[in-house]
Image (cartoon, rainbow, N blue to C red; front, side, top):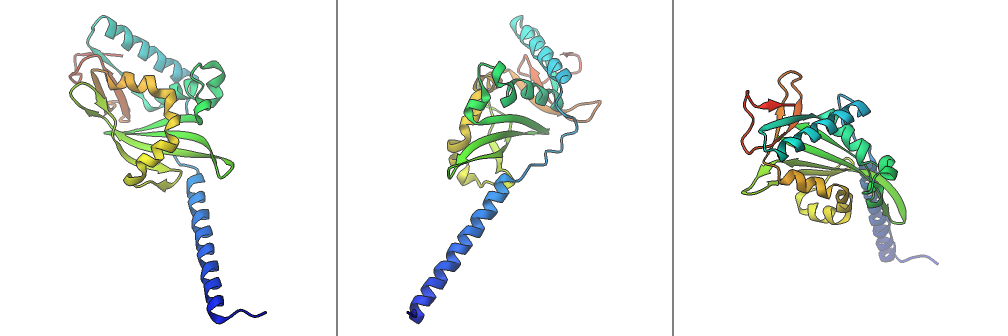
Length: 222
């Protein structure tokens, strides 16, 4: 039985539309799954993780006695601390068990004045378990009584997410942030935060202040 010309045109158009949808879907999946080139200068390690913990302990002790000062945390120290405390491999020893929220690991990239936060996330999509990187670039902004971290840009894998879809992405992926809820709240209520260039290495670093003003040359440093 032969098909009439109008029906042939309809079927051809439908086949073309289905093919375009499949190609677009395949392209999007490829972009989402693409590995991310973070280009970090130093790999996370146990020595820098210990140094980050030491600095954080000194900072908290200074806060308790109202001593003015600040600590510097380099990118490798931050990433070493994150790998040791907030990764799926560390989940067995952690009560917050990051893997339970779909979070596999997380790292940061510092650039004045922004921070890019990378979360490797495992999610189920169309019945399959998929791993990908969720990137958010945030800026430090001070309001009357706290620090806010407004998003400047977002990506999933190598796919840039437009601002109008950020809320949707947060709804589906935001569970990965649960492991950091206490830390985010602690940072938000610190007297002072700054991303600045280190005078010696000329690399960006995160500075935590025990007071509201930025540190001067005579303030205590750790």
